[in-house]
Image 1 (tube, rainbow, N blue to C red):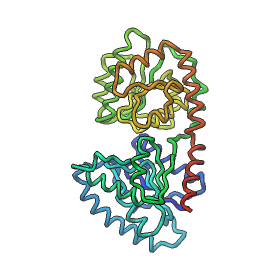
Image 2: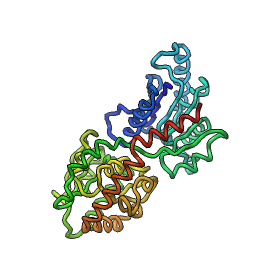
Image 3: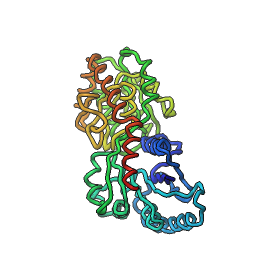
Image 4: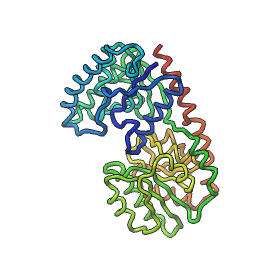
Amino acid sequence: MRVLLHTPLKPPDSPVASGDREMARGLARLLKQLGHSVVMPALSRVAPGVPPPERHLALQRRARAHAQRLIARWRTLPARHPDRFDLWLTYHCYYRKPDWLGPIVTRALGIPYVLSEASHAPRRAQGPTRLGHVAVERALAAADLVLSVNPRDFAGVRARLRPGAHQRWLPPFIDTRPFRAASGARRPTYDPPVLLSVGMMRTRDKLASYRVLAEAFARLGGRAWQAVLVGDGPARAEVERLMAPFGARVRFTGAVPHVELPKIYAAADLYLWPAINEAYGMAFLEAQAAGLPVVAGRTGGVPAVVADGVTGLLTPVGDAVAFAEAVAHLLERPDERARLGAAAAGRVASHHDEAAAAHALAASLALLR
């Protein structure tokens, strides 16, 4: 099939690193591995990022005209034209950045409509988020297949699907090979142990996670540790202020190209992220694939990618005291870190590698025939 991959939030070629971008890239790779062609014609592109809710009415109006142009062009294209597609797949659809185009285009052209990582939040049905919420409901009602990535979204999405539509589980996935390769260079432990966090430095939930992280560091007492923070963004100055009391114990790398991340994971002992309102966290998969145990907040889909007591430790989300206690526990027990890290690498390789995801995606797309 020729699959139009629509990414309303962030395109695969975005220069800004994020888990959303990596999942979009991963879906494109999986589709190609399965023998499908991936197309992203210019008319299917929308401005990346999250617009304020007050702009949604204007976006809805523009989307209708935009969709009609895309439909008209598709109908003029010869069957083998590189921009012609026979399946529409939208990655990431939620109330702040819904899919305005897909339901209109697929209905007009009579082609299958697939959503991956859609969420339905009834509490957004009123107030300024109402239009985005209604757009999500419209997309879910039009979908032939929804690939749910976050277990937290499964029931809410299921309730909005039309009779006969399919919903299938697609586990979050990465290409584990570079992380497994890098893990071969890891030392049994570093002195002092290296604590690693990888996350964008922006306001709202990310900054809240850095606040919990800083409070947890302050509670580690006289234990030996050093930390590496990978990431950048508009809130970096605030993150640096939070970490200033720890001086040279906390090192900032800034933004790092994704290809360089495996060796950074391999140079650490423990991966930390408080995960405030985290969907599931691609970095958790990367860290575990490299053999790192994890300490994380128990929220969203995080328990689906970090097995508590098996590949890491999960603590009540936002609880800096419990988070610090879990970090201290593992700082003092290198043998337990090694056990969790080995289990983490094995679990991600078997459950969250691209090979497992490709099998799940192929079986799901076969339902559309």
